[in-house]
Image (cartoon, rainbow, N blue to C red):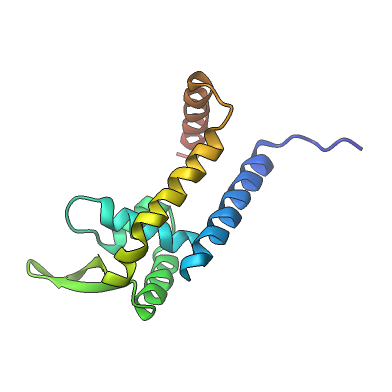
Length: 140
């Protein structure tokens, strides 16, 4: 029996493969793929980064990001630091421990992007982004 082609299932499969591969690579540093992405996002962004920024970047719920950040803080990868202008806000700061592995994490993420784009033309990549953007807009 031939498997039915469903866009959602292919996207899910690709997402799972990316997650598995990133988790495998990040395990060498004692972190998960998502934690690696957070370290890179915080260190590469200009200005202060707060939990809501990470939620928006990863498209995760607040409770999920809270759990991830709590684990990262317990493991000494980040700190939450109060800001002068709003007592309710705490910016996310990567610790020395997190910074020590940041450059390798960045290389691993770039390698993953290279793997995903391998054997695709610029036109195919542009088409991919155009199509997935339309699909995402279908939910708005």
